[in-house]
Image (cartoon, rainbow, N blue to C red):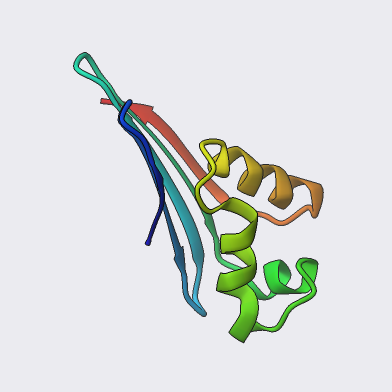
Length: 93
């Protein structure tokens, strides 16, 4: 689900499932495309850190990051604060 986009080419998506939580960011401009991705495989660690059950996990994450240009940083800062491991990708195209 797209949680943020602006007229400058930034788009951020959040996917929540019982298998993983994934956030993707794309910055598109005429000269380049920049991408970042953070994927958590231990979903239980996230809902425990947020003090919610799985049923309420997605809505709690949306309240934390939806419609925020810095959503990706907020998400990874949260993961780092709670020492939750995640896979990270960053690259230019």
